[in-house]
Image 1 (cartoon, one colour):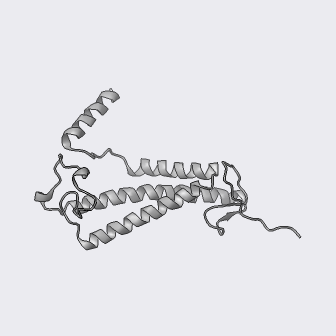
Image 2 (cartoon, rainbow, N blue to C red):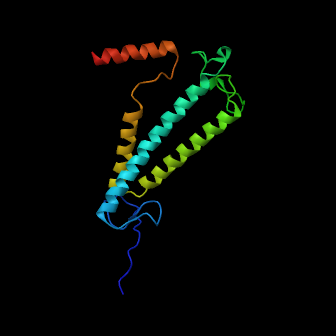
Length: 168
């Protein structure tokens, strides 16, 4: 009696194509066509993760646009100024509950996708790992066309000058 194909669990770097299972037993790859489709799906998950990161950042900017100007973040104030247990928003602006819920949902979704991609990585399959990295790179390229300031205005100006210096 022939044995039914089983999921292969490799704990070492491998390039196995058939009988590879991706995260679930039901995602069992039996053919080269299924493997290519899996690579595309995994790459798209990497792109989706990068899109979620940008969506979170844009949503936060949208919320910050509603902040009263008296609470706008000054360049000298940093995250270190706000303690973890103080219960205060970093900029002094308390986010309304509806927006906090939406932010939490976006954050939870991005954590889920990132952990799912980590589990794909843990198959140790070189092709699947490559698909994760390619998807993340494509997503980063597609959704991050500009360098956004993360520091105060003076520091950002200094960064711009350094970039201009290196480009010339």
